[in-house]
Image (cartoon, rainbow, N blue to C red; front, side, top):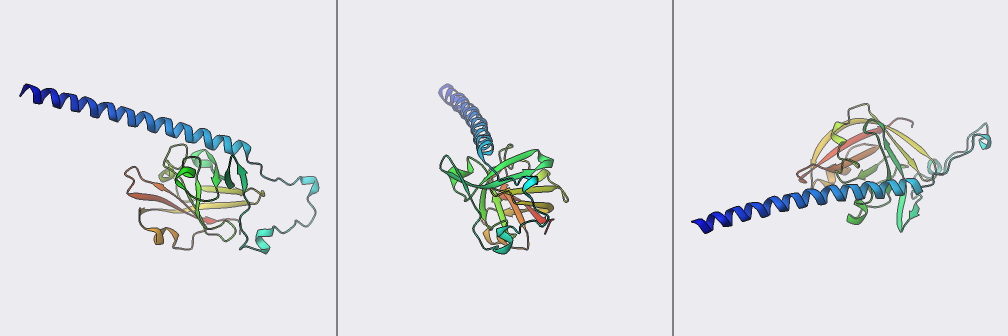
Length: 201
């Protein structure tokens, strides 16, 4: 009996140590991701037009003439970015990677599908607090902004929030939404999903 008690105590101590290790790793991983995103954000050069160079009649952007065009990218340290996402109410400004992959998700939010030019952009990110961890705090009417690497700006407004199952790929891409943002819930089984409508069409 005494040996069983010692085994239980040692097992409990090992579980507590493992929990501390996992917590520490998660804190480190989020810090590293925040630093990576900040570094990429600092390096993204978005083309801004000088006010002096603007003519009386503004030039029509290429994406309006050809909405099916690929979104331009800027390569930084081997990673391609399509622009910058801003969510003022969450105090977030983040670079957006051109395509989703597990390594890219550890750097910044990623384009899951679609294009800002065709009003069907879907962006995914880890639920780190410095990424999309607070998406569920968004409310209808909150502004969301996206600026591509050519300097074209797209303004959105949060329309609704829904929780989708992790395997609900069709549901994620369904509906007439101009912008969708999503992340895993804490359990990892579902996806907190924010649907937005474009305001400056």
